[in-house]
Length: 248
Length: 224
Ligand code: HEM
Ligand code: SF4
Ligand code: FES
Image 1 (tube, chains in turn green, blue):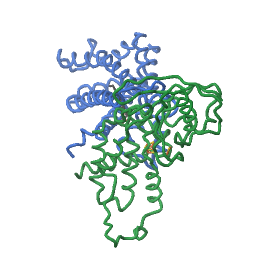
Image 2: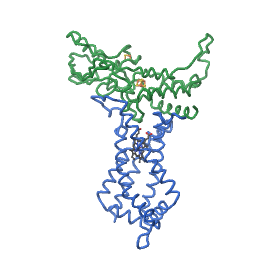
Image 3: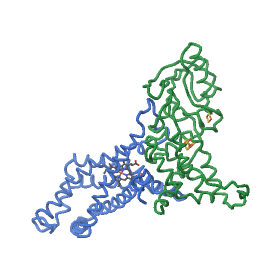
Image 4: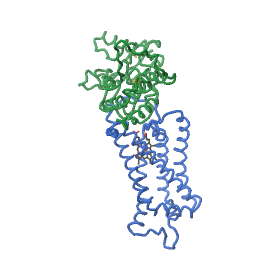
C-alpha cells in the first residue's frame, strides 16, 4: 500500500518542531508499524536527509521503549498492543497517518518522536521497590502463603511495561495508571507491607512534582494501555494513599 | 496527614466529597419540588419549614453554599493544573476512541450548571432573603393571608425563556452526573464487586433527577 505520513520533526529539545509530510510506497500489510518507519528512514537516508528518530528496542511488546501517537491514539488504533506489535493491515492503501510524540509537560521531546520518560524512573526510585536482605539465607518466596487471587492481581499489575501510553492518552497527562500499577503490585503482596505507607506517599509526591495532571477518571488510559492495566489499580492506590495519609 | 490536600489524589478526594454532598442535596431538593406537582398545600408547608427552620437556614444553608463554591473553585483549579500538564497539544487527537464526551467535558457541563445557579439565585434565593431578612417578613404569607411559596413558583414558570434556560441547564446537569456519579466513587477508592451494580443506579440517578426537574418546570409552565 501507498501512504502519506504526517510526522512531527524536531531537531532537539531547544528547537521548535513542526509536522512534515512524507510519502512511502509498497508497504506490505504484514509489516509492523516500526518496519514501515524503517522503510521511510531508509528512503530518507538514501536521499541524504536526516532519518526520523523514534524509540524502540525489543520489538516484541515487552520492553516498553516504543511509543508514537498514531492517528490520535497512543500505540495506534489497535487494542492491547504496543506500536512495535501494530500491524500495517490496520491501515488502508491511500491513508494519511499522523504520527506524533507522547505529549506531556513531564515528557519533554528530545528529538522528533523520542521523549524523555525518566520522570517514570524517578517515581519508581521514590518507592517502587522492596528492601530484601540478600545475605545468602534469603527466605524462599514460595514459603510465604499468598492467595491465588492476590497473586493474580499483583501479577496483572506487574505487567506494566512503563511505556507511558496512559499519560499520552490522558487529557490531563496524568500518570495515575502507571503509578497505580506500580503501587498495586506491592500493596497486594505480604512482601510489600513493610514499606507500604512511605511507598505510596513518596511515589505520589514524586508524581505530582514531575508535573503530571490529576485523574478525571475518563478511563482513556485503561483502553489505550497495551497491557490492559485496569482502573482498579488507580482505586487501590487512592485507598492506599488515603490510608497512608491518615497514618503518616 | 498534612500533605494530603496539596496532592493530586487529595484534591480529587475532596472534590468527590463535595460532589457526594451535592448529590445528596440534589435528591432532597428534588423531593421538595416534586411535592409541588401533587399538592399546593404540602409544598407550601415544606417550603415554609425549609425557609424558616433555623437549623436549615443558618447551618445547612451556609454549608451548602460553601460546598457549591468549594466544588466549582476546585473544579477550576484541577482544570488549570491539568491544562498545564500538557503544554503542547496533539495535532490529531481521537478522544472518542477511548473515553466518553461527558468525561472529557466536565468543566463545560460544570460551567453551564454554574451559569444556571447564578440565574437560580437571582430567581429564588435573593427574593427570599430579601423578604425574610431585609424586609423582616418571615411569616411566609401574601397580602391575602395565604402562603406565598406556591404562587411565586407558578409565577416564575410563566416565562417560557426561563423555562427554556432551566431545561437546557438540566440537560447539562444530566451529562455532568452521567460521568460524575461513578467518578466520585472511583476518586474515593471504591472500585470493587459492587461497582457493576452501582453503575446502573448511577445512570438512573443521573437521568431521572434532571428529567424530573425538567418535568416539574414544564408541568407548572403548561398547567396554569
Ligand atoms: C457549580 C458548578 C459546577 C462546576 C463548575 C463543576 C465542575 C466540575 C468539574 C470540573 C469536575 C471534574 C473534576 C475532575 O475530575 O477533574 C466535577 C466533578 C464532579 N461534579 Fe461538578 N461542577 C459543578 C456542579 C456540580 C453539581 C451541582 C453536582 C451534583 C449535584 C456535581 C457533581 C459532580 C460529581 C459527582 C463529580 C465527580 C467527582 C469526582 O470525579 O470525584 N457538580 N465538577
Ligand atoms: S499502565 Fe499501561 S500504558 Fe501506562 S505505562 Fe504501564 S503499560 Fe504503559
Ligand atoms: S519496542 Fe519493546 S515494547 Fe515495543
